[in-house]
Image 1 (cartoon, rainbow, N blue to C red):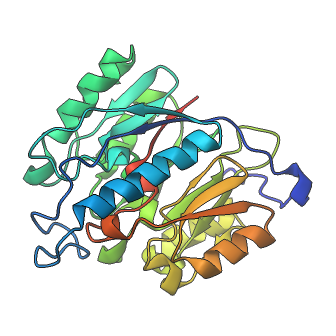
Image 2 (cartoon, rainbow, N blue to C red):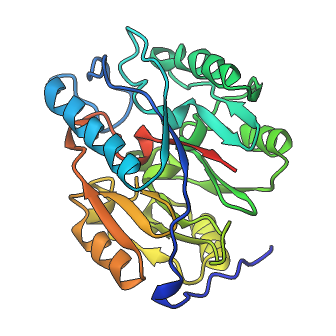
Length: 285
């Protein structure tokens, strides 16, 4: 196994890189069904507050100099706001999503159609996968989750589609049913600094914990308490890390490692098992 150079560099080496994100407005967001441990149809969503929280997140990206594309929301698809699940884009190629649950099945074709409208070459998936929910791209590889929502066959298909090696990681705790709620990419390694991640070990099988230790021996280890407020469902531009505001200890860890935490409150989306990263697909270069 190739071991990445993950040595921590001096604080001054943390530099942001302009990113290109894809979001979907939460016009139809609600908890209308329960397909993960976070969802409870008896708990009402404050729709006005959700709209405001999402708008703050979008404006945070814009204020940091990033680009944000918007995908039109579809009636009857309350979880479409979680655009990260809609696919994986690397360069001018995209690997589409094929959702596990029937409630979200229509989202896959909708996101694929939008990606084609942007001139991307989209591969229709033959296997179940939920996009960047379980595929996190680094400069040299793709970290891929399996165990709940994405099949190992999809890992092979994604590697062939995007021509990047895929490292499979097994998730074992149903509370962390996607990789992007168990692990955050802090630096993708595309710049002058090495790849860097943070993760909650309890979400992974013993073998996958060993894999992560081998690949990222200096990774940030996040507590269960911060993981349970979806603190790892964060987005980083290499310096600024947009992180759920409830993950206070994680924010301190980020500061200690030379990053700038940017807390945002997405508590309404936590009711559906999502937060910052769930609401954000990235167009990786």
